[in-house]
Image (cartoon, rainbow, N blue to C red; front, side, top):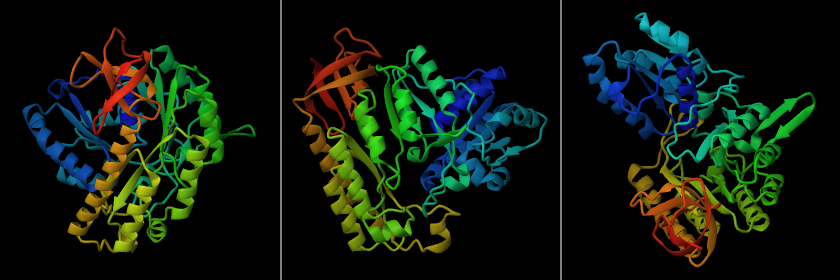
Length: 427
């Protein structure tokens, strides 16, 4: 999400005559895009502000701005605590950057953190900041209506609103024309994408199909799906088009129905398992990844064991795993006590990680001896003698260079694997 937002900001600033630089020492305007999902993300931002304060002291003409979710949530604190910050700009205020910069240049603190019910940044062609020129993100909606008890997103990004499908398709077509060969459609809950115009409704399955039909050689990914909303219609759409990648990220958060209810996830353990069964049945070769939170409010050992058993049962190819971090203003912070001691959270998280690592390793070993179509994204991190790309199932593969280049599709025979990577040769 933040990458896509940063690309929108760069596009707006480019129209003002600014040029993007990779060197902070060359910058006259420094914008830090922030996230409030977890506490450690915010702590890193405070550290970053402290680290760059010397630039402002050396040259008072340099302007520093905080943008994104943390800017919206902590506007007063930022202005009061960080005197080096000239601008505080929320995620729905990027179109106001010209006037906010002018205000900051006049010596005033520039602040706009108002949330919008309409802003989707449609009509802005993002300046792509990715390095490979092959894969890119396309935001299809903003905000979120799922008031999960632990999550700050609805408060800092506002209510859910979908983007005009024509503007999405135009952006995808532009990416294809510029040499990109993979797009990832982004939304807090892509399954609830909904656009209505002149009596016609476009839901996410129809949008996904329209993007897939831009070109059969364009790979299409999406993130993130919500277990309560992911439909058989969507799964059947994926099976109809070979260029829609066979990977679904489906956050479970907990294996305990009691904890899921406290989290306000609006599904049970059994419902989630049913959705996984549907994926395995309709898309047999589909990889599934997930998110898991350890140590949510009042979580018992029995709740934790239910999470461990669901991980074993689900056979997830990959998982993002975290300790619960209370976020101010959320329902959990207001209504529940963060009563799980830190050492227990850590122990439970380590147990989750241990099981998931074994499952992920097993998943990769099962790919040995198989042939996968791989979209080449660039050189391997370790050697320019090897290329790197991903399978449709979102697994990284490295293989000898052999005359191919970035953006090519190749069939790779998997010979072995590490804990993170498949290793093979062009078939």
